[in-house]
Image 1 (cartoon, helix red, strand yellow):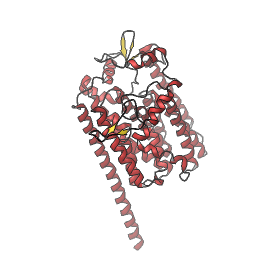
Image 2 (cartoon, rainbow, N blue to C red):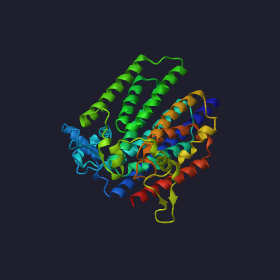
Image 3 (cartoon, rainbow, N blue to C red):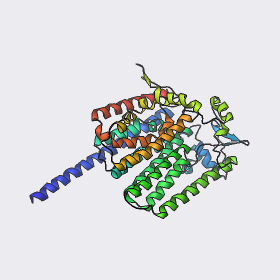
Image 4 (cartoon, helix red, strand yellow):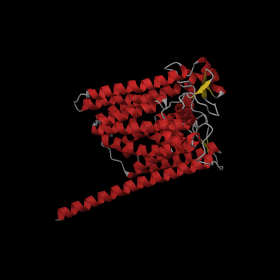
Length: 426
């Protein structure tokens, strides 16, 4: 009887703790949702009114009329080819936009659906965290979970990109939505070995790629699947390999067809025909989109140009060309601990860290060679390509970071991003 009573008491405490943890996370997600929509309403003045650069509405309209060229009242940053205007952004986000288009057609609010997408990303990131923790057998305190969740939602590019619609931000938000869905099923597959999880992971990965082409680098993570099987002394089932190959060919063919229908070239996305800022006209004309000559400029604005402060109504002073990711997304300041400490490592974690490091390194290398930093921004919005993966890697070492440091970094990050957004839109 005594043993039964003790077991019941322990079970009750665990159950209560579980309920408190999930209620806290649910409450925080609700608060983040309120903040996103409050900022969207404040910035746009009318969250149900589309911006002038709601190009995905016009792309859907084109598809429904059997075209791939758009007929938008604004042509800024579109691609002009053979007297027609095209989008150089990937087409996959139209799947998220479609329900809004069917309801409101060209009046569908990109401000609204971008804010919803940003909120979805927060929830998805939380579920990805849980699958990641489960696979690597990592326990996190509630404080550590709150730190990561709020850092992603209020101290990462997800916040700035979610609150104002417009093609550039909408494209990035939904590209990351697909990427997080791919991550979720990726780790679900590693935890369960269920075939359909791998299929869904692959499908969402290619939808991410067909939203934002630089997300292709995340395909390197599929190499870890070979390590996963080898570590358990198993061969990868042939159906898994053939499914991945067939899906790659299918989505590759769809992307190639889309490019061919626009520009008669399966590899041309349209960036060479872009009509946007005069600043990049000469670069596009000379086809020097990628070059080592941009590295110094990009390193400066991505990593060295720290944000500054002023005792005024808007205390955060930003540079719209870009500010150091370490000064705007302070959770990244913890990354050196991954190299300093070895306590968290086992073979499985080390090998995943190696593959993830290659993924992140190649993506950042590409960004350093690119002709633009993502100007007209808070922080470095292109860096969002690698932020979700970097934040997941922090799970390895958060248990070794004092709670006081986590809270200080979180409060600083929220302060910078809240006032940074206000400074950007003032």
